[in-house]
Image (cartoon, rainbow over all chains, first blue to last red; front, side, top):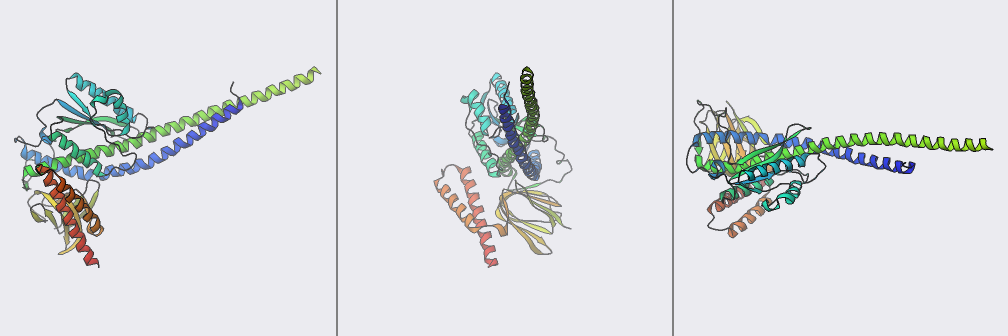
Length: 293
Length: 140
């Protein structure tokens, strides 16, 4: 049986763990609020961009020589998969879900005879993929490390992807990320970035809408709008993933704090019982000693 | 009749109000957004967006390239980067221009799209210096 001293030490250590997890929960809650605000602030730009793309896409539909970002390379052979994970752990199933989803996607693509390349964003995904698919990894990008993501990070990644697709290094690009549904649940989602899937029948483009003028021209606009759109999409997924990470961490730490509380209650009960047993034992010894005289 | 003007950068909405007229630095020359204009989409160069009310400029924003979407009653400016003119820094822009010029000199002269991109960035940085310098003189 555990001695009283051991039990006291256990209770002490669980208490300090609870302090840490509850502090992490608070921090995650504050960061979550900020991440959500940022994700919302980025929405108008993305919405306006979608509207413009829908308009442009409608007026260039069916033309030859469309940019590769829109029309693809014409092949479906090499797939680039970009899993978005966090740099830090202790966020429940946040990273594990992405890793599992990525692994399934890779296996499925390979079974279909496609070549798969990987460009993991965030340390956790990279560490995992290094173990299982190290030969497929092209490169990796560090996550935000818990800090706020500047748009320039997404822009850099987007420029790189655009350059890669121009050189024909891949045909299809898919992002695997945690879509932020609410604080409690993040849904691992795959989104195809290249070739771009234009909204087929957008409500904004109605038949009686006035005809747009384009300056300097449809192709020129399209060819500079598309890379920008890629960056914006990436930025949006990065922000969602960041918000999701904080949400997942908050939930995980909330659970951990509650479990620590339960463990402390249990240990305290055991401690008190042990103490009482010890006292009873000592009393019995004294009394039986006195009776023997 | 006023026109709704929105200046949006990827990170946030900078300006959203109805004004009388907005003058926008288009790639092929400045263009004014006014009510009942035929719908138009255009590419922007680096330059200053001026917002007019009652015949006078009320706000100025520097935009470093981007797009604009004009309709009869609305004008959305999607700026790559947008800064209120008062917050510009000449020194920052000079430094950036110097860095761009260096990378332009070092760039592969056969890679036309990349050169075009660098040219556009340099133009934007020059416009930024001009915009910031103009404001600084006025303030002094």
